[in-house]
Amino acid sequence: MRDFLYSTSPLYPLGGFCFVSLQPTKLRPPPQTAVRGMEVGGSDSNGREFKNAEEMWRDQVGDPSKKTEWYNQGVGYWEVCTASVDGVLGGYGHMNEADIRGSEAFLNTLLSERFPNAGTDSHLVALDCGSGIGRVTKNLLIRYFNEVDLLEPVSHFLETARENLAPENHTFSDMHKATNFFCMPLQEFTPNAGRYDVIWVQWCIGHLTDDDFVTFFKRAKAGLKPGGFIVLKENIARTGFVLDNEDRSITRSDLYYKELFSQCGLHIYKIKDQSGWLKELFAVKMYALMTDLPKRVLRTRSKVQANKPGIIK
Ligand code: SAH
Image (cartoon, rainbow, N blue to C red):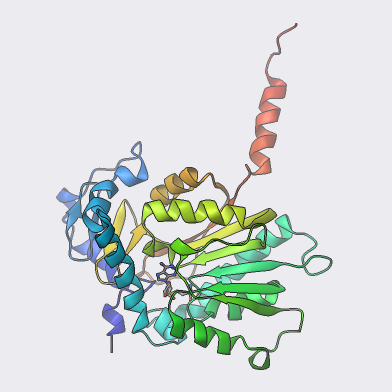
């Protein structure tokens, strides 16, 4: 049985601890505000330093057999975890409520701005990625969406999700149901074109390499309905990245994420920090991402242009 205090869960308590404690101040890279997120150095959970993300990825997944091993060990880590809220939260099951509260406030704002008719004349569909036992779907998504699909590579988690979400085990109306249960990893999944209003990705993207991150989100974009959006909720490294050797995942910095989003052609519509979080854990951010430029940016631009002197033709 894994010792949760030392586990490298989605909450990665010791990943953050190691990063802070094992890196002597003078060895830390200087503040690199002008440097791109992935060019900043990072470390692993044994305190090993990497010059930048490229060096780390070359070392970890530099050839096809290493890449296969990376993904096998990532899923293998979860295959031996208990199918419970405490299991998917690495022994921090008591953080479930704060997490759901934060997500619900964020989702409410997004839905009211993006889908003002939700709940009346629209049929909303969501995808819960790396869903584990269906914790996020059961506590949040199923209340807001008419249909939720779940995607999860660990079959015993997905089977628990199926039981948790069986119509006889939940109290929601017939208008809200879990429809599809896909047992596969994100890097192999292609959503049906235009099916989803929201694609929710929480505490699983750290298992994907940068290349697979970008190709997955590009496919996910095609899975969105017009006006739909992606929510990414993740742990955030203070700078660069932290590699977890045990579960083969990486915690990226905010800058690192922003650089990957731009490679995916995704625009940030809103960002929010998770509040009420434990200090011993990595900070958590929620990003709402869209395929088109947020309207307010367009408005600002046209305003600026309208006030610019025009050439008389
Ligand atoms: N999102 C859920 C589960 C978090 S635990 C929640 O917040 O409750 C992390 C999950 O990521 C596990 O269920 C694990 O099986 C899944 N996972 C691991 N590798 C993955 C991959 N390559 N693609 C998708 N999910 C993955």
